[in-house]
Amino acid sequence: MADLHLPGTLTPLFAGLPRRMDVDAATVGEVIDRLEEQWPGVRDRLCEPGPSLRRHIHVYVDRERANLETPIESRARVDVIAAISGG
Image (tube, helix red, strand yellow):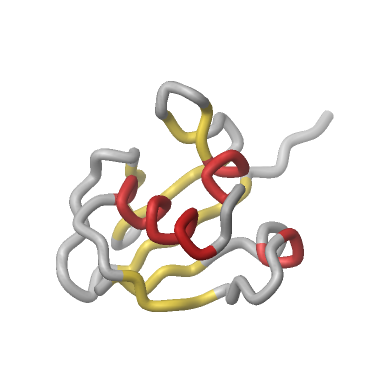
């Protein structure tokens, strides 16, 4: 089980989506699959077609930058962060 933390900008878009939850997944991609099963449309917010993470979405597994193929160990912390840019 991964300890998943989502950005506050994502949760208002999907009814019932909490900011923190436990997710049973072996990779970051599987975490997103589990979210998509319960909240259709989450994948489109996090991933480009291809698949790859969107440019402004950063995922960290135990404080290390991750991609969709990054494995998740038992009780790992997974943080999804929506980058903010501007000029």
